[in-house]
Amino acid sequence: MASRRPHVVIVVVNLPVERDRRVIRECLALEAAGYRVTVICPRGPGRLTMLPGSVDTAIRSFPQPLAGTGVLSFAAEFAWALLAVTTRLLGIMLRSRVDAVQACNPPDVFWVVALLMRALGRPFVFDHHDLSPELYECKTDHPRPAVLRVLRLFEKLSWRCASAVVSTNESYRELAITRGGCDPARVVVVRNGPTLAEVGPIRTESVEPELAETGPTTVTNRQTIVYLGVINPQDHVEAAVLAAEHLVGLRGGEDWQLVVAGDGECLPGLRELADQRGISDVVTFTGWLEGDEVDALLRSASIAIQPDPPTRMAELSTMAKTVEYVARGLPVVAVDLLETRRTAEDAASYVPNGTPDELAKALDQLLGDDAARNAMGVVARRRFTEQLAWDHQAKSYIRLWDQLLRRNPTGYNSVSDETGTDAARQTRPQHGTKEAVP
Image 1: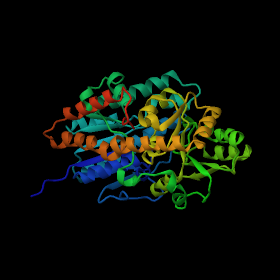
Image 2 (image 1 turned 30 degrees about the horizontal axis):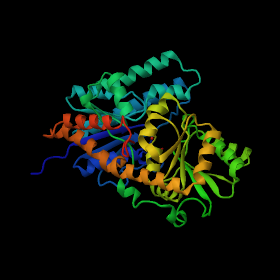
Image 3 (image 1 turned 90 degrees about the vertical axis):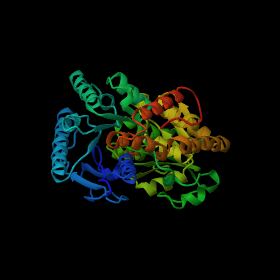
Image 4 (image 1 turned 135 degrees about the vertical axis):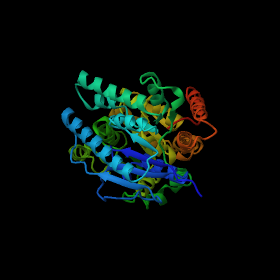
C-alpha cells in the first residue's frame, strides 16, 4: 500500500496566499514532491478554498478586521492573527494528522505554535521573510526602545524555537546564527524568484515593440522604465517618481515613460505627487498586477528601478522585485546595497544614496546606451538561469523537508554544507550569485 503523504501546514498572515508568490511556489514544490499542503492565511477578496494552480493545496482563511497603524493597533492585529491561526490549526489537527508547520513572518509571534509542535514531537519551520525590528525602525520616525526590545525577543524566540530556519539570503542566515544563536546546520538559504517556466525565453531589445503590445500599458514607441513591487514608506518609491521629474529636465519626456506597478499605502499620495509635479504624462500607475501581467510588463520594459534607501533593513534584505527584473534580463538602476549587489552584480548600475538626482542621471545614461543595456541584460539572464531561478532554490527547500519528515539518507548536513559553499561563493565577485513583488 502506498505510504501516506506527509501533511505540512503553512502559515502566512502578511498577505492572502494568492498574493504571496514565494509561498505559492513553496506550496507547489511541496505538492510536486509528494506532500499534502494546507495554508492558513488572511481571507482575500475571492474567499478561495484551494490554491490556484495546485492539485489539492487547501486554503483555510480567516477574516482580518484589524489593520495596524500604530504600536497598539499592530499589537492587536498580531494577537488576532495568532489567535485565528492557532484556532484553525487546532481544527485541522482534530480532523487529520499534521506532520509539520511552517510559519512565515512578519509578525514574529508564531514561536507559540512552534512550542506546541515541538511538544508534540513534530517539526516547526520558520520561513524568515523580513527583519521585524529593522522594519519597525524604517517605518517609525522615533522608534520606542521598549518596542524594539520586544520585537528582538520575539524574533529570537522564532529562530530558537524552530526545528529549522529558512532564510531568504545569506545576510538573514548570518543573523539567525549570530543574533539568534542558531546552529548553522539548521539554517538553510532558499531565495525568492520566479521559475524558469514563468519567465520563458530570453528577452532582447529587438523584440521590445512586439512584447509591449501584450503589456498592461498603452502601446508606445517610448522606452519603459519600470518599478514593480509594494508601495509603502520604506520602499522609497517617491524617489523614483521624483527621478522622473529630474529626467524630464535632462532629456525631455518624449522618448521614455515610467510605469509604477504595485499597491500599498503610499500609492494615493504618489498619484497626487505626479499630478502636482506635472509629470502625469510620463508616469503611469497600474495598481496591483497578476503574474501574467507582471511578465508582460517586464518583457516590454527597457530598464528597471530599485529606489530602496540605504537603511540597514534594505542593506540586508533581498528585494523580490530585483529577482523579477534580473529574470527578464532587465538592466537595473539601484541603490548600492549589499544584498542587491549580490543579486544583480554587473546587471545593475549603482548609485550611492538613491536621491532623485542620482537615479535620474543613471537612468539617463542607460537610456542613451543600447550596448550597455544589452550587456547588462546578458549578465542578468545568466545569473537567473544558472542560480537565482526558483527551480534551483526548490531543491534546497525540498531537501530540508525530506530530512525533517522522511529521514532522507543524504542527511540535513548536506543541505547546510551546500549552503555554506554558496555563502563562500558570494563573498567574491562572480557571474552567478544571489537573490520581496509584493
